[in-house]
Length: 562
Image (cartoon, rainbow, N blue to C red; front, side, top):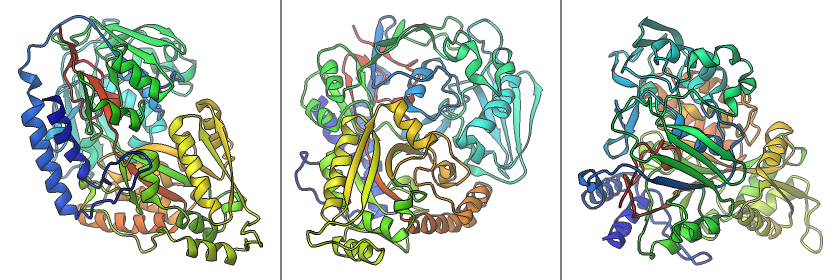
């Protein structure tokens, strides 16, 4: 049954997915029309629900410990405003959002979190949440004022996602302790999709009120004690593990099922797979385990590998070319570097086929069929054109084919980014460009790339939610924080369109998205490698597949089978 499930799950990858093969083998991406991809995804999801979706019929068991492998330590325990994946890993077991979303039903909002019900006005300008009776871990009630405080004092100043979704916020009203209404000055239909704890993790005002402008100074930043989620921090040993225990004041008396959640820190992706096989962890989430290990574990009894579970945020791997770098200021040089790379082969060799070359910032996923276009400027694999562009830009090849141009890649010291860097070096060497690779630990990489902005090329494993408007932080000049604008774009037209697109009606928005795709693609500052994100889990765990996002679950619905 497990292997049959894995085969059916593989069908999900058809949506914009290059056929999977062994690392280094030849793969030809399927010519899949958007309509066909959508139907194939629906068929695969139906098969999944019929075969592996029956876990709801199993008897859920209480007790035990659930162990998740993660790649690195968090920078802090306040993931409500962080864009760092590792901070989010550490925060989610303690987080409480307003809504959850049903990945098997077109991401329909589900009132299984703080919101007991909601109403969205017909004009999409007034969103009202009715909160259930719930308490913080210190016994204080969770109120509508906590929601208002979180949005106004934390999400709007610090969260690029909510900054875009609430760009036309008019007011937030709290008529009573359990009702909160968000009023907009212009319609925004997509607003209903951003109340998962990943986007909106409600904070206790009585704890954080004095730290809105300097939240890292709050004692709770490194040692949270007042939370609303199913678990609460028990122990943190840097470089080894983070332990959480049941929050006895969690609103849902039926959850969580396990007594303890442990996040075990395992930096090496191969070791992560081996730890799962040995029973030392129960789950190796996407971005924590290599594609090679996932492919190997598909044939191991007692382990299931899933290719779904990232519906909340479609995974997109960006290569950013820093156009503010003196070497890359000339668009012709950036375009040459893009044309020198065979992206299909790159996806095969580096990502084991988990992706498809994409020439627009909106990925080849059926969720975006209605707005995705083929940009006017596409920098497909063409080494002869790349060489001609470099010649014209003032970097002619000498008698040995070498040019007076060295590109510096600044990357994180992990296997995937090492392989990607080496592959790019090989491609660029073929057109006479040298490459220097600077491999740093995560903190040093973030400092150099996003604070100093000292790099020619860097990488970002980002996500794309159901509304492309939230991607302003990837492409707008005003966003300069961690994981923002890796191409260092400074285009006033792009900035302005992102400001207005979230409030537009559907047809106008579609036209604006087309204009944005053309503008961003024409900058020649990005290579988009859309990735599927497989993950592996022990069959001794109940409650999977984990959807809508395996990386940012709170683990309340997980149980351990006896």
